[in-house]
Length: 395
Image 1 (tube, rainbow, N blue to C red):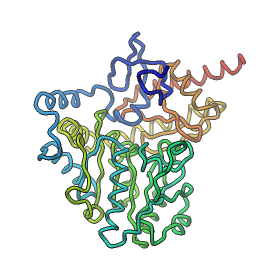
Image 2: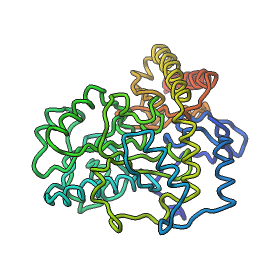
Image 3: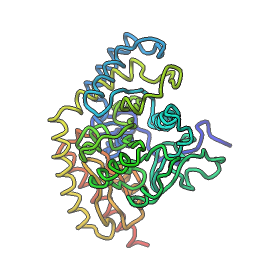
């Protein structure tokens, strides 16, 4: 008999009842060091006092009014994002999936308004993840994502990760834009080199197509800059954001230049819940913390410390771990052992990691993880490796 919760997740046998900073607490009192942060969502950890205060105060006043009216908290967050980014305008969503849907619509509508309605194709890449909506799975294009859900939404051209010459050859008079993650998350923590991102921006400019960056997982301070593409010194036309932007409250956004957004006029898109007072109030507080230069400097310092210690972990357990990849506090351990076994061994040692493609485990801790917690993370990951090796010897 089917359970009351649709069984689309193979859930781990833990039920957390409380969170404190980088820690999750089970009903039986066990404390788990959380290196997953809800898949890069809890950017300031669990129950951050400033976020709790903001949410509590806003909840006592106003939760929801709909976008039929002015929402001061939404305006404040949009102004902050515009001030901190390339963008001229922002639309708020509830998730990364919804952000993807709007980005696809926006790119196609731009060309429609230019009198080029045939320009509907978006170039995307192997290993990508853009959500689980019809557009999102079509954009990813992998069999795992689309099998059983046909007919698949047309208008996407899938390329290998990453060959600029292949991108250039794929651009035609039907191409609306190129959509890419500066750092692939689900694809196995695969960063696009800054030089490649610079070259891609130049190619899009030369060929007159839009550049869409999916920063749902790698944005909002995760790489040590507010947005990952800022390391390369380029600007996209459209950017997808979500996850960390709400610090755990469901919130997403599409940021765009005035040019790219020019086709999106009244009635062309909407969201009942998107940009509600609760979410945007929390988002403002998140951005106040994470966009601060001193906070981002600390992310970079801690990323260096964590990476250095992880290199030692790999050297100490070469039969379990193979390599380290990533940027900032968006790190991936390429495993020799099966990554799902490493994740499960971590559960036994009360440390949480997240599996990804290419036999990688993701390390996506809260951005305010402490040095002591980084040391504890290495200790628990080492214990997980020892546990795996001991189990292998018994077999």
